[in-house]
Image (cartoon, rainbow, N blue to C red):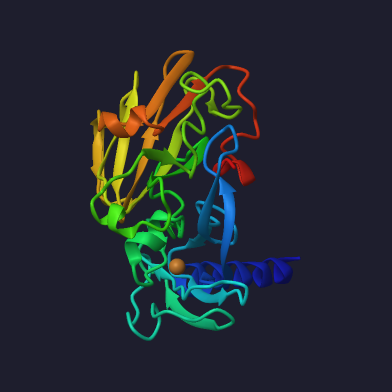
Length: 311
Ligand SMILES: [Cu+2]
């Protein structure tokens, strides 16, 4: 038995040493996303809009990796499309021409990068005219979780909100250049999570009082800044770019510019609702309000798994 114990200790020691060499745990994460040009609803009534998308959704799929991972990314520009498209990950350090450059319909491109900085980052199509490719829906979020699981307090629930502007005519890029948007929205829909301002809304965010709710917030723009604020709440912590080292506490609002992102923690001591908005009020009152209900019987599936980015 003592011999067996020694053998076990040796294995435990080897494991401990391996844990110190963090890159041993880094993974290669393969991500494939299709650029698609499809019609999608932009409000709770189902009004359709000629969007350009990643994987047929606005925002595109949530990509999630861990700090130090290698992302092997493939963009497929579906052959049915009419336009060139591209991918620009704000979590990457690569060559702008080689890797972020456009590909034509029917073409595929792969590039690789290591996710060196933890946080939440914007991704978007950068093809010309970029303002139109973003305004029509080619954007999303990538979360790079910190390698150290204790770098931030553990979140009880997580949500992703991506702010963007809607322009009435998807073809009128001059109107986009003049910043003539009609609505500011979260996750591609007017009052998508706000049954107070839109009785047709069927979704809202949920949590229990006392839970730490973490919101990964991306501002896709293309033009408007966001003054991100929880009405009837206070951000317990805000992390600029989502990096655990960039922590500020007790914030009423925090400005996130177009193409930027941040992570926000919220804890409610009471039952009731907060309204998460851009406090730039023309944006809020045209669609950028998300209701977060705090109740003791909150749906246990909300803010977890597939319900982090609520479709
Ligand atoms: Cu595009």
